[in-house]
Every structure is written in structure tokens, then in C-alpha cells.
Length: 289
Image 1 (spheres, rainbow, N blue to C red):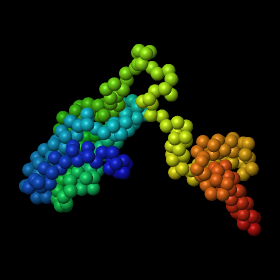
Image 2: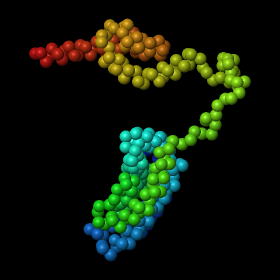
Image 3: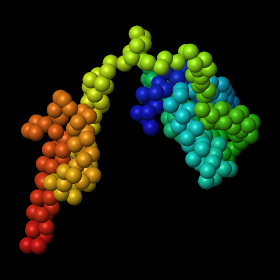
């Protein structure tokens, strides 16, 4: 999930979480509210700062629904539909748990690792961000606090529950198609019955199509060979379903040849199948001895 976030949503996270994170790092006060970690006289003031920080993060996140990257919205939509089919009452909570546990809260706790900020964090500031993420994650999970020093934040859970629900509903709904994507051609005169005569047709012909198919297939050819070899009942079963499929691919993706030797997929399947059968027979003989 970390790799998914960094690949699809780094800029989004920086735009949404950057301002409140920078504000937290530039603040002069502490956010520590655990009386075993901070003087009792400072806990109240620290709690006020922490509450304001948590609300600044929630404001930034919940106002970003329209800017949420499409991959994240697609995952949230699929998760919502899958959970709704079995546990309708848990649909929104499941999306909240996923989006915040796997997406926002890790970036809040470690903004330097997710590209949100480029400055180092002190232990005290990271502690404040960790407490902020804990508050937000508890809200997203629909839970309550158990630690006595967290109980003063129970009012935040109540106040932000409905805005959070609306946000999760929004990002769980697939975005509408781009303008014009759902348009249909109503005028029969606009349809070209003979695309070969269309000078704007960018089709490259069957040779180019085969070349593209070849470029797609080559990277996965070893996995295909292994799967076919495992499925082949015999390395000589050229007319069986595995042999026919392999030879059909040979005709689709060659030339150029896929492999050295006979240069065909079926040849690679036969060789690997023979080696697998030989290895199994050797293993059986070793077990018998």
C-alpha cells in the first residue's frame, strides 16, 4: 500500500497535508497530553493545541474529496461495494478504516517519508503528529478513546462524525466520466462505413498490431511457459489444449522468435515440461531409495 500511495498520490498528500504539517512543525508549544510524559500544569494547554491541530488536519482532508486521486477513489468504491454486499452497516466505516489507516495517517505520522515535507522532525513534533493521527484514526474507525488522557477529545469524535461520513460517501462514489465521454453518435452520416478509406485512421495494420502484441507478451513469456508446462500432461501433447494454445500464441507473436532453439513458445513448453517430469522422476527414485 505504501508503494501504491507513493506512486499515485504523493502530490495530493503534499497539497492536502502540507499546510497543517508545516504549521505543526513551526509551532512553539508542545502537543503532549500524557501526564506521565509532561508536567500536569502543561497538559491543558497542550491539549488545546493538539485539538486545534487535529481539526486543522480534518478540515484539510474532508475538503479534498473532489481532488482525491482517481486510483484511490476507485479502490474506495470497490471496497464500499464489496463490504455492502455482506455487511451493509459497516460499509462507510470500512472505507474510513482503509483510507485513513493505509493512506492519510501514515503520511501524518511520517510526513518526511511520504514527501509531504522535506525538513527533519524532532521527537516532540513527531509525537504531536502521532497523537493527531491517533485521534483521526479513532474517528475514522467509529470507536471511542480508552486512555484517560484522551477522553477530553471525545467531543471531537461527536462533532466530526457526520462531516466524515459525508466525505467517505463522496470518495466512495466513482467520479463522473469526463465531459463528452458518454456522448453517442446519433447521426448515421457521421459513421464511416469503410475505415480503410479514412485518411485520419491511425491504424497501423496487422503487422504493427502483432508487433505491439509481441512487445506486451515478451515480458510475461517466462511465466506463461511455466504455467503451460505445469498444465501440460505430456511434453508431446501438441494437439491437446495446452499445445494448441501455445502454438496459437506462436502464430500470434512471432516473428520475431520468442526463444532460441526452435524459437517457439510450444518448444519452450516442451523443454520445460520434460525437465519437470525428469526432476519429479528423480525425486521419486530418491524417495524410494
